[in-house]
Image: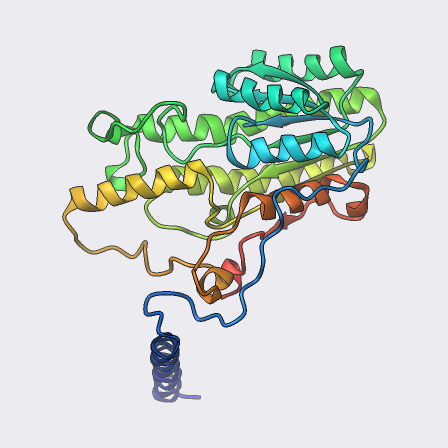
Amino acid sequence: MTDIDRRDLFKGISMASAMAIASSTVFAQAAQGATGNPGKGLGTVDIKPVDPDYYIPNRFKGKTIVITGCARGMGALAATRIAREGANVVGVDWIKDEGQGTIDRIVKAGGKAVFVPGDIAENSTCDAMVQAAVQHFGGLDYALNNAGVMDGVYSGAPIDYEKQKHLLFAPVHEATDEYWDNVMRTNATGMFKSLRAELRQMVKQNRGGAIVNVGSVTGLIGFGGTPAYVASKHAVTGITRSAAIDYAANGIRINSVNMAQTATPMVARALELVTRKMKDAGGGPSMSMLKTNSLLQAADSHKRDATPAEQVAIMLFLLSDEASNITGAAYATDGGWTTY
């Protein structure tokens, strides 16, 4: 094939792709118009989300789990559900009042749980959470490493855009050292230190175990405007796969879940900050918002986000004995985001 032939071939492919994209866009617009819901999803049959009160009795009876980031969102729901399924819970969070509140609700409902306040990027916190599992419940069977941040602001602080904007997500040329360092400290270093403390105990016990690390769809693909978050979540994917190799012979399974937009306080806060930053920037070229919906989100008639209960259901499945043949997996719990 000559160079001219190649150019003609690639030109034809490009034109065909452009026509396909244009056709799909027209179809989508027409379908939205036909349903009378411009700007909403295309779906005629919506998928019903998991009931947040659903649980499997006794699935984790007598087992002990450490859950980081237990104060809010997915961490709080995971702690509540797994306690109902029989597990002893050690909750960890740097938001002391809300973290303690999660544990108090579990105990009030008849569950067994203790709270360890602290920052997972500190060795003392990671050591204390494992020690609590051993002292209160006799050992450690599972871990859900859920704690994470999207920007460099302490997540317990209210939004103060002008004072905090140097700590917020931004393209690389605008990002500050403080933003990068804070995000990497929690999401990458904190994940490493949590894993290290948990694995030391599990290896010492010599009775196996399972760990789930909470990553993000941004740990599987690129995403604009959040360089530290994307880099740190890629680190979660990497350390999950690495640790799965090292500890398979110890009977310890290690996997990650990687969600797209999920209805949590962290995501709600991020959306508010994105709106402020876009207004502050006054427009300009950007590629970061070319794709804003997952496959299921776009198809849903109300474009709903994933729910915490949907994410927690997969987390607990991966911890359970039903997932006995799964390790080193980076589960895309992203509603089909990475499918197209």
